[in-house]
Amino acid sequence: MAEPTPTPPKPARLIRIVLVVSLSLNLAVAGILIGAASSGRWKGGPPPNFEVALGPITRALAPEERRDIRRSLIQDRALRDLNLRSGMAEVIAALQADPFEIARLEDLMDEQIGRMATMQGKVKGALLDVVAEMTPERRMRFAQELTEEMSKVRPERNRPSGG
Image (cartoon, rainbow, N blue to C red; front, top):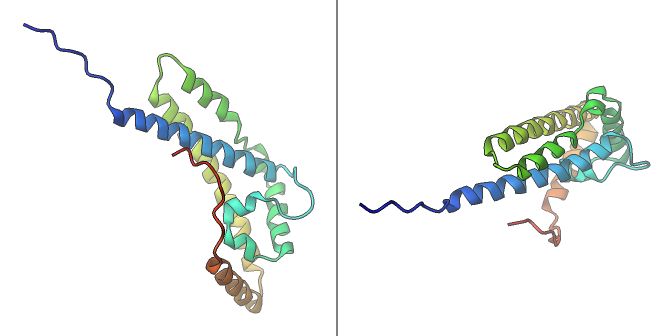
């Protein structure tokens, strides 16, 4: 009776690992941008990462409204204590571990996603506070500016997607 030959790892598992690593890198970049803005490292106008976080909504806001959102986020104690980079050392260690444990990496990524969700919730709340303070006329102008932002064709930026 012939011994069964071991089957090579399935490509689906490899693809899943690559996707997980890609997601963790994307979260790291977003975390760095959001963390820098919430720590008050940028001075002057609104931080560039709001473009990442809110896109056309941010561009449709007036500069003072963007500053209000920024100020609100900087003053939020929960955000100052939210260290988005802290989990990345653990993610890197999990990726380097031998034997590799996909479940450990998944748990770490779930924690990172939770941190990002907290940040997104805070940004949403700050934006809603600004919109709630708008007069009906300003809200209509904001809606019009948002419509214009959405209709603009933005040039493709040459950014590697990893895929």
